[in-house]
Image 1 (cartoon, protein in one colour):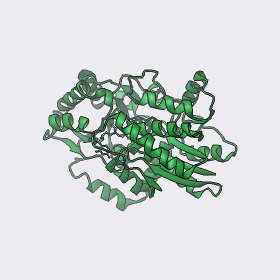
Image 2 (cartoon, rainbow, N blue to C red):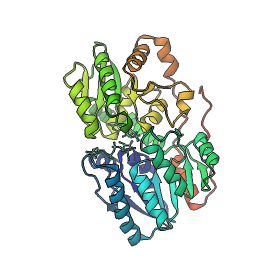
Image 3 (cartoon, protein in one colour):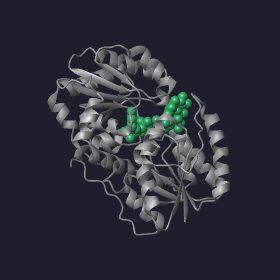
Image 4 (cartoon, helix red, strand yellow):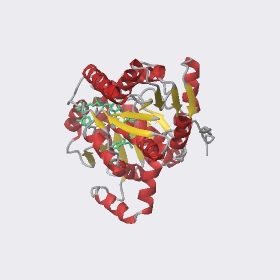
Length: 382
Ligand code: UD1
Ligand code: UDP
């Protein structure tokens, strides 16, 4: 069976990396990898870390490109790849423009699609935008719906989409556990990671920030930056913000926060040092999907700068809180967790609602027709 895996951005690469390795090791499968290059620098670092050498690189990234230009070029370039390879199946991940265009290109050629991380929904097409549309399109055209959680499966069942649904857990936890195991067993690696952040003081707490959502461009980012400016007045806090390469993010963030004391604006981090910083953080403030899934399993409270989330499981368990993009709400929530130990203890429990590190095995079983023992999340509170 020829399987073509397609991805293009940093989170897709991290979440597909364990699967790409397993596909290569499976004798019944001839595995081919196509990267669209929707991201350039941020993709390269993940490919290097996980030792992925793509068979095709479509190099689609153009600085600040429009979604229509990217979609059109992705469809055309993928059509040529499908024409050449005629794979038995395509695998895509999540909700990016790459995933949407690739699944559509396969659908138009009647190639079956497997969707990894199927079924996530906010049921609000404007949040996250355009991702809520992207993932629904991918689910509609997929015949194999690899849902990370029972909640995602329930969404798909309610929509009566027709594809076979398997609850697998999220492969991000497979990737995260592989990286934390590396860090935990290697003291030299830990020392070299610590040396990358000489500005962090042991007697200050670390607020780790990421933000890149398109629906927050403009007023949302202005409010986020204003909140971080206020929080930077605290002498007991280091704020580390690896700033996404999107110019719509970099301009407001660098313009407002550069040269503030104890605010460390750095380039996007490679996955290994980013995981190290999550481990070291006191609080994670983010709008990222992947980080929302990773941080709870490291026992870190997450404040999510969004009004709705497609990942309700950790919110239900109270280790993730939605704070929107309101300056007041962000400052108040971070301050509460920093100053009220009981409140902090209440939300800093280690929780694994998104996976147990075996999602890849379940996906492989589903692909080759072995029996799948579906992922069951541990009860909330454990
Ligand atoms: C994309 C995904 C989003 C995902 C995010 C992860 C879409 C519509 N959005 O958003 O779902 O959460 O990736 O980060 O698919 N850039 C670089 N180098 C890079 C990457 C980006 O310079 O390595 C700059 C370019 O100017 C690029 C811009 O960032 O045009 C935006 O990148 P794009 O992939 O379109 O969107 P993201 O905002 O990264
Ligand atoms: N990440 C990283 N370096 C960074 C910030 C994030 O490697 O500087 C990782 C993070 O651990 C997670 C993934 O990138 O696995 C999330 O990517 P992103 O926030 O870009 O996208 P999203 O998950 O929101 O789609």
